[in-house]
Length: 113
Length: 209
Image (cartoon, rainbow over all chains, first blue to last red; front, side, top):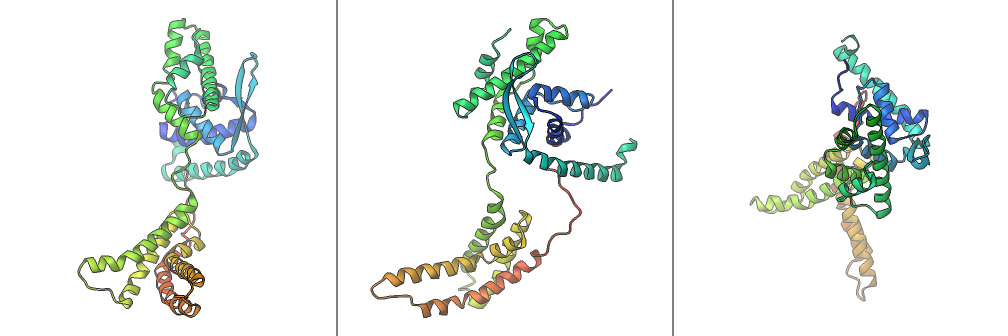
């Protein structure tokens, strides 16, 4: 059974999760939440209330951009894509998290837990 | 199926954004709820159960409205330049001005010029420390520590400018040079206090914010 990761860690990792997903392809909010939940086996779960403030914040910082487009069902949805600034931000963010997990592993041996 | 737009608009009423932005946010959240609702129906829930589960997605609408507003519009209370330069500079200036008053208030008598100079390193140190803590570069730390001297010289320049327009100049260039000499020991004292905080902090740590 997958345990839900505590909310603080999930919130901290949300930026990376969203940027990494959008680096693959443009997605709208509902798709983003489903993809994150699916790809992490339910460990990360974003409700509407936690997802959209994050998306708007990333958009304000210029890392992602949203535009309305019809989805596969022909309904208008706001698709988000990674901007060049977001792409630039993603690499160091990945490195920081990698560094963080390595440090945590050295400290607590989390990979063998 | 519920009118998702009306439902979201009604609950997001505290949202204080321009009408066009509200319209867009409402449409986007309504679309999300619509997708979520249809997903629940697809899982075999009846309409009432699906609606209830969809509404459970957001329990605190007011908080959501506040978070969206903050994410879309609120800037940080202070930008980095303010935290790294202006605020530490103001602290240095204020403490440099008020330290003689504080000493006088404590009934220690008028502060001699030499004793005041001994207090100035503390002002410079406080400014450089605050600037470094806020992530200021070495230049920012020096400028913020020397802020009182800069302010003093700016005042002299202003007085000199005003005096030059007066019929009888009350502050001449030689006065300016004479009084500006005070800035040298003051600047040195401030810089002395800032010195321990001019070194770059040791690296090797990463913060995830």
